[in-house]
Image (cartoon, rainbow, N blue to C red; front, side):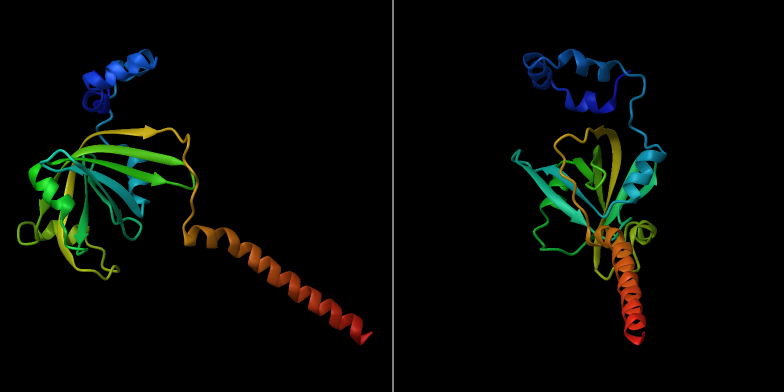
Length: 207
């Protein structure tokens, strides 16, 4: 058995390139691993549920790849079971590049980023488009009632493989909420110190 991602990603040309640059032996361990890593564990599920964005790549009939950023409230990308995830697809610029690509070729790759902690989860899967009249209960399960946007369809991905990336070369970035959580205690402490200072000055003045 081997890691599922190596079965997909380690093509002949990739193996030849690994050999050329001296990493073939180390990467061979992925092909000898007992755990295929194509079924989500609690670690992956928790990571996916905590994301507010991801990047996805599809390929058109002409062979050109297309990378798209998708964002929404935390948890908009939902885990349906240990082999499938999905999200509601809202109206955008109406070019339908990713949707069109998926209709022609269901293969998809995804990068899920945790910039503050410098963690990255890579997913390979097969996507399908679902419309409300086909599976209304699935659309309802993927909808976020607090997010005011029109759902046009859902995209469901059957996971073929996943892999965690190393943090090397990943620059930490923080959302407004994350910065606020770090700064707010300092601001509160600063206000308390200002109040204490004012009280002290009043005391000295009255004396």
